Amino acid sequence: MYNSLWDTTTISYMGCAAQLFFSVFFMSAEFSLLTIMCYDRYVAICKPLHYGTLLGSRACAHMAAAAWASGFLNALLHTANTFSLPLCHGNALSQFFCEIPQILKLSCSHSYLREVGLLVVSACLAFGCFIFIVFSYVQIFRAVLRIPSEQGRHKAFSTCLPHLAVVSLFVSTGTFLYLKPDSISSPSLDLALSVLYSVVPPVLNPLIYSLRNQELKDALRKMMTGCFSAARTCQFSFVQCSQ
Image (cartoon, rainbow, N blue to C red; front, side):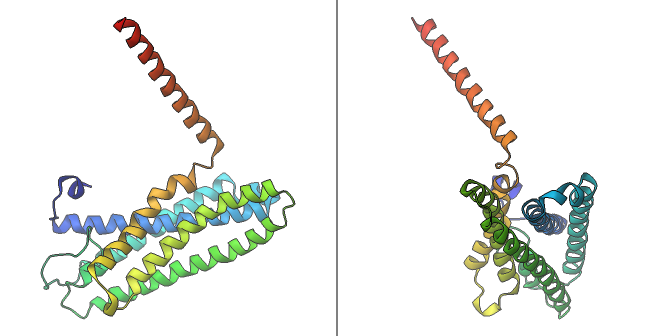
């Protein structure tokens, strides 16, 4: 954020390591939470009578803790492995933040294959989560299509489709960026893919996490009504003072 706001293109070595750690940490936790949300929707739609048992407060706390812990471990492994490599091909990254593929391009050691192996393992785990999400949504859509009420089907689809779209975007762009061959790599393509998987999903989080929440919508409606009323009152007082 500092680099973007002040239009600087330099960052310290430790700052780059910290940036890579936190970006991997938050993106790993993000995908884990997206997977948990899919399970939440599956239970709510396919097994509503068991929702309180399967997704009680303790179960939710355990799943959230597992998501953050796995993200932390994943980020720690990638950061330690990436910055243990000797970098001898300059210090310029063709990216707007410190990213593993761009740092590996600066390495002059064949040890970078170890980090590539870690990336492949992470991609396989992410793909496994994606398969779980796809299988869950197949069951969800089968259950939704059996709902006799059109309003009920619309409500279920409107809740699930934003989440499914974000998951698809996150997995497809991230996997392609990290596993694509060097022959089709270009700075503009890498930049576009990085924006799609690191910027767009967090921007859409309010839509899939909370804007479907009726209490939040009511609170936003009250806040906007209050602001509108206050603006009209100020305008009326200004007119009176002018007269």
